[in-house]
Image 1 (cartoon, rainbow, N blue to C red):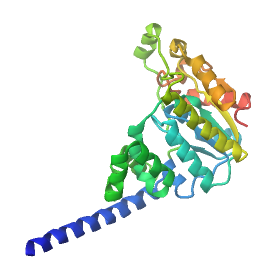
Image 2: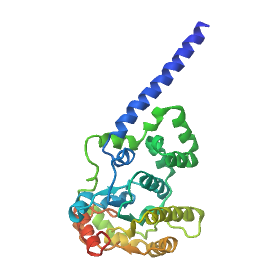
Image 3: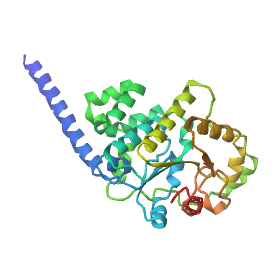
Image 4: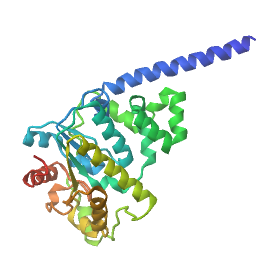
Length: 295
């Protein structure tokens, strides 16, 4: 009988410790300056929404705000899949007044990334949409967070929230020039294919969620612009199916996609083949302003 009491005491202490630890880590997360913490803590109201994967981080917020006089919120994250983005965007429109404008780099529509969903368990307590998506795509991991709250914080996303606890994440952009080895290797690149496979279940799923983002914005009176952000020019020329990819998105959304894939020619403007640095981002934003994509 005494042994049973010890077991019960251990289970109770474990449960209490898990809930207390989860509460403390949740408080740290919610007060962070990280973008998704601000999203779920009523600190993300903006005039312009910026959307993409890591290539969306080149929407350099300080420069956009300087040039437009408008506030921005950037949803972009490394490897961001479009189904996760759709859930985040819908949450935004539920919590905030509709922004005036949304700019979407459509190359986020090139992948499924169910592994990343688990990291967003950090915010699933604030979003039934996130919770449902995680349960759908990663049921074991999703249900684990209902047993142990501490498990929500075992991820890179939580580490990012800690990193940005007391500083802005709006300057999260490469600040280096593409190295000489990459520049030389670009002269002999193999043909590259965006992960676009027409008429497949996965591609239909990706396009449906991109269209979901577009329709969510439009139904709230937001002007939605679709773009392909710049690539390093020799790399852009090696992409064999970019036109087919763009045309499929135009057909799915009914919107023109502005192709800026080769719009920046200055080598000094790139950090690698797929990402502008701060210098290139300023050039690109000037071009978006010139073309009326950004007002």
